[in-house]
Length: 277
Image 1 (cartoon, helix red, strand yellow):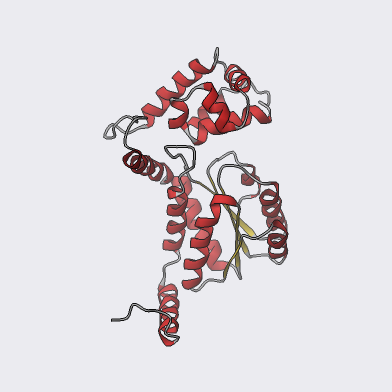
Image 2 (tube, rainbow, N blue to C red):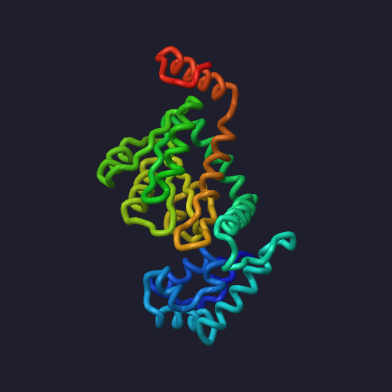
């Protein structure tokens, strides 16, 4: 059972409320951080006050934050494989980050994610055109998918400008086209609305996000959940980039090799590169 599933099972059946949900999202997205953090640190990460953290713990059936943290820490440590060292908050940040990313990659490779990755690649292959949208930190993986996917011969366009410009692009999608939405941490109203619009227009929608319970999942035909836990305040994009690379690997057929060769020849004909021997 994942930490997200465990926390969902502890609910009383009554909606937690928007502020409490933000606390839960921190626990799900950054369980290592949360396992060693004070209520104040959790509140700062979630953008709420300390009393909200305490009330959330109580709504989940705990006396307070220390009791929830203890249970969370036990579940997190149990999820660490026996061959890995226990997390050490005082460890060298670089080494700790590499260990964390290794854990994120292992968590990414679930049967559900692999199935969604293959389905997303098939949707790109079948589509007349594919549009990639994102906001904030998701722009990096979005650019990788658009650039390398285009070199592989697919009509993939990346729309990362203003929400109004993105809306113009989404409005041009038709039945059988493909939309790929990437979201990390906070979800903007624009991204949610554009994803819903794409589905309404008949596009196949694939979502890469860090939370299975993301509102984007409501409109996703294919959902890829990528862990983003880092060792400090900022998220890690390693698992999301790996998911993008996995999609690209599914696109690597004879046509992709031929298209890449044509692009390389064009670069040479235009004398664009300065690395020729």
